[in-house]
Length: 123
Image (cartoon, rainbow, N blue to C red; front, side):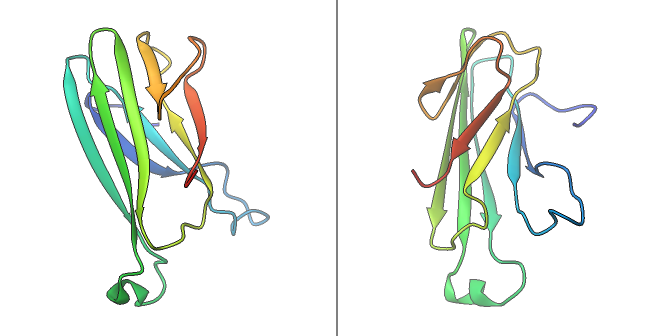
């Protein structure tokens, strides 16, 4: 977790503990730090296999994250675009424990005691 993060920042992370037993399991997460003001933020994260030149043939994908903040709510939408098949099927979206506004991720409202949203991609 970053010590300091500017409002509106979104960081992609390798999620979960990394051990020799699970090093082949690719889990991802997003650390989301909502702006305290009315704001519209969009971040795009590039994905390819990282090993071959298949990206030259267009074998790529993007994780598109849109976040709209108001005084009352934080609305986040995560969409995968492109034709590269991601090595993970789900992603966790993390919010600061101090966030008290209503949080909505891909149309689903989080419970007030929930700071982590686990979602399946490509639904």
